[in-house]
Image 1 (cartoon, rainbow, N blue to C red):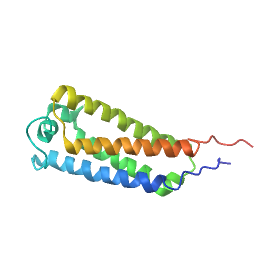
Image 2: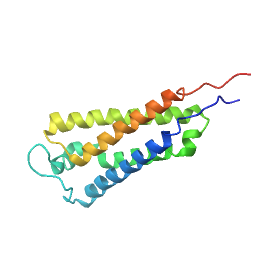
Image 3: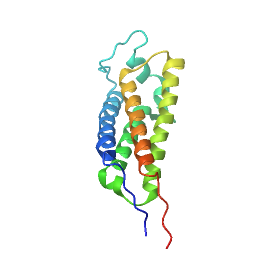
Length: 156
C-alpha cells in the first residue's frame, strides 16, 4: 500500500505558473535565437547587453542553444508541476521534479558565472529565466519538505 502523499495545496498553484512563465520567456529567447533577431528590448551597450550574451559562443552547450535547453527544461517542469502529477503516488515523480529543478539551479549558476566573468555582460531576459528557475526550485523544495519529501512505501 502506498504511503499517504499529500503535497501542500499551493504546490501546483505556485509551481505551474512559474514553469509556464518560464516557457514563455525561454520560448521568446529561443525564437530570437533561431530568427537571428535583435529585438530583445535590451540595451546593446555596457554591462546590460542581451545581444552579446545571446549571440556569444557560450550561448551553446554541446552544440545546442542554451535558450532551447531552457525551453525544454520549463516544458518538462510544467509537466511535472501539473496538479495531477503533484498528487501522484510514485516517489520517483517527486524525486524527478526535485532533481530536475536542482539541475536547473546548477545550470543557472554556470550561466551567471559565464555572464559575469566570461562575457562581462548581463542579459535581462536571461536574468528573468534565472530568477524563475530559482523560484521554481525553492517552491518545489519547500513543498517537498512540507509534504515529507518522498514517503517510502509502507510494508504490511
